[in-house]
Image (cartoon, rainbow, N blue to C red; front, side, top):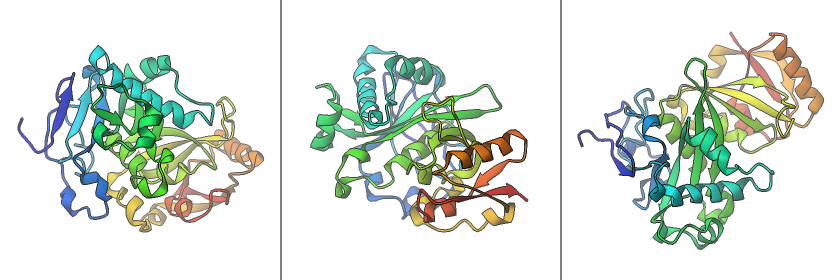
Length: 311
């Protein structure tokens, strides 16, 4: 196969491999050490019809260009065990919040229309804690240790982030793979060439510090009572992979203030009334409002967040 992008196809067809722009992966010194390990690889669990034949062409980073990825066709019975392992990992991760994903949702809402991706670890390297937690089938050689699900919507190339799961939650601090969740989502965005991504999370969830680092972070809903957890917000990421390195380097984003101005409004992530007030302003067309990734990264989860508008 020509080109520098590699894939291992396990029960599916190969995506074409073209060289992306940007510095070589070797120059990305900020990437964690585990990223170059041969016993950890990105994967896509995706129907052949949904496969990307030009992964990464819209994103000027090439972290994943030289990183071999595994590809599974989920409608083949031989790939059932890998899918069951994804569900086992996800179910354990969301059991506490009462939001584990039913099998029919996994198939109807993720596999059929979208992309399921993440990282997998060679069975022989899998920590005992994950072996006991996931309980992968005896013959499974690669075991998923993260999962990012994205589903295309009917509107103008926009996608919805349906799920993000990382095995780090179940590992001792010293055994965790730094940035596993962040890189899992980045790989999915890169693979599917996603530019506009909507997502849903809770105001005081640590996940906000991850989700806000993929591009401009716009507020779509500030209060969402139709969700299982009403104190949930909906966001839109205007995906810009040129900014992804900051998740690891912790550098500020000075250009944010060149394009955004303080609206004079704040939202209290611990106050339902504050959420409702901002949501009413959104409904009235007073937005759009944006959140600052710098502020989110630097302050505590229960502290008020400034809302910004475009200049």
